[in-house]
Length: 625
Image (cartoon, one colour):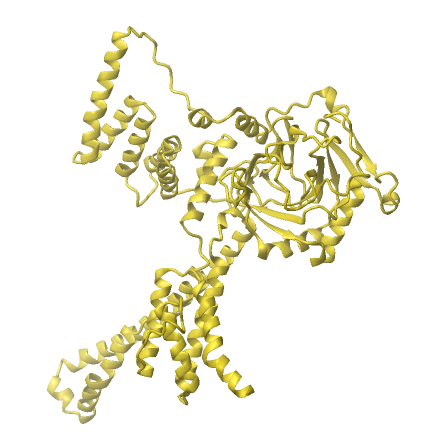
């Protein structure tokens, strides 16, 4: 009976389970072509004709039915090679599936921490490419030596062909060379030395960023440009705030890079940024930078983007410059006539209305003016730049630093922690040296393999979804997973005096290129009564936020309503209450994470809930209590 069960598992159950697993994989058409090629080869080798067995293999594609039946044949066959081939295909498919699922929808641009893996991938590819070059050079050297040897031989032989062939050894060697050795040379020349490199590239390609990552990184640069008011020249030269000129990894943008940024903005109908980056590409071309992008193409995009912003005269000027380089440019010739007509029409209207305004020098338009951003957005960006902070000298005089033991807590009585008031309304405090290097590295180590694109809860549907205004990846760590996490949770409880057993798990976040989280509340508002209903622990009463890295530029936590800005400092944590003692939400705690301009930002936070705090933070009677 045991033997029968084993055969049943081998012949049917195991391969069906495998097929079901593989069927769930989302492969590209190219991958399926490779799989089908494998299966076709095995079919031919086993001389097996596929027969659809819908009742037995219901729901599986034909390619998997082939594989199932081949598996049965191989299990019953004594042909060792066939068995090995079928099992090899199973291994290839399963490994490919696991690798693919691991790399699918990676959103690399949303996490600098995970992007570091790409550098090592690229380094491995460079090594593989250099090996390929060495192999090609070795092959060419062999061909070169053969050619030089025969060049000398034929030069001597052709001076006296009959005399040369009169020697029987020479005659034999001529026959041998032409019959055998030239064939070997042909095989050598035709030998493909790229197999190793191409195989490695094919394997690594499944871990490559995709178009979404490239577009996301490009939009991040545009976002940084707007938030920190950077001109295109500053970004193009790589001279960003917080970057030392002596750093070896400072890099600049080429004409192709600037052109690509402009094209991405153009595809989003963002003509403001299209103009900026096409103008930068044109400037670098005019300065003599060599590029595969020609001036005519840049001018075509530039003139049209300016026209879309309503500046006919400048659009006409660039169109005329384009036609001076390419008089037969069909679209430009059409645009020239159209722009001239529209400009004449515009001037006629101005004359009829007797508009006599002097022409003002063109000023650069702010992006928020073009996109009609809300005032909060402007406040948020000002705070990110260090502008608009509302802390008066009088209020600042009320902020202090102290050694804190949380009402003589036994653990901190002999070793109090350093506490600093960061803000008064809402009260935000910072704890210095509150998490050590080993703990931070362990938290990052635990979180990094699990990092996934951070999501937000749709206020209408309640469904978790990604959003363009939250660019980061996050992972959740439970207390039982490692003593370090448990110790951190206990530390938060000891210092806040709040019960963390009803709190959410420790969330670890790593921000990506230009990573940010635009203004939001941590607590559920009155119009969101079911925000944390499934947790059964009430609203988020407080937020504890660890900074686990320094950030060279950008990345501050700002509170637009309060006019506060808190800079990241490695090894520190900030804490604030989201709710008043009455349970009402404190709307001044609306906050945001500024885009990271330079650096890698790691944070972890603990959201503490109402349940369990009844005697630790008693309720107040007034709404603002």
